[in-house]
Amino acid sequence: MRTRMPAQSDLTPPDASEIEAVIRPFLTLEGPLLPMLHALQEVYGYVPETAHAPLCAALKITRAELKGVLSFYHDFRACPSGKHVLKICRAEACQAMGATAMAERLLKKLGVDWHGTTANGAVTVEPVYCLGLCACAPAAMVDGKVIGRVSDTRLDVVLAEVGA
Image 1 (tube, rainbow, N blue to C red):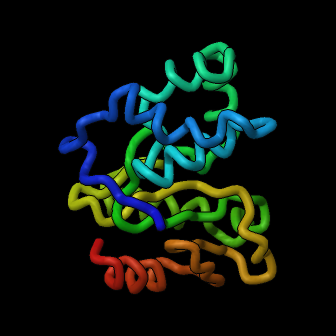
Image 2 (image 1 turned 30 degrees about the vertical axis):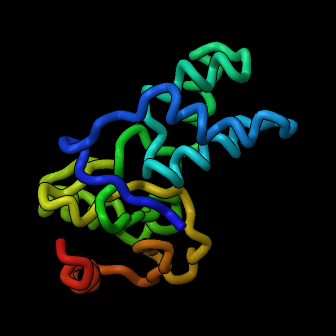
Image 3 (image 1 turned 180 degrees about the vertical axis):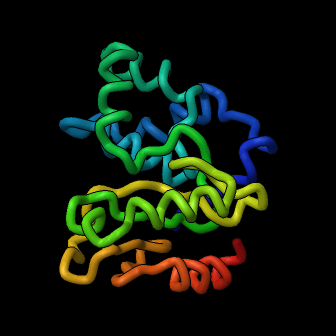
């Protein structure tokens, strides 16, 4: 079960002992970094900056190596997401069907940029590079539910449903 943290402004970052308690069960695994990152995100809703030093020390890796992994896997967050996550497909098929312009209108309407969260904390908007629904482009995903043939009107309905 995923634990969602309060809005970023209300956060007290976890300290090293809390981080170590989360990552300790994974130390005996072969290749434990990804399971540790997933566990941290499961507990805190993101991978806190305060986890970087304990992770590097436990795994004997550099901060650069850790940052490389965090930046490669787009689902790891550096800060908490909103209550709902809306992912807009940015792959070629969706772009060809108008997703880029639609996304720009949506971001402007919500007053956020990619990876941004609405002021009320309801929605975080993220890019994704293929949802596998190319025949029904443009595609989006809300809280894991894929939606095809997305339009501005359909996005308005989705946003109203999630309280944005």
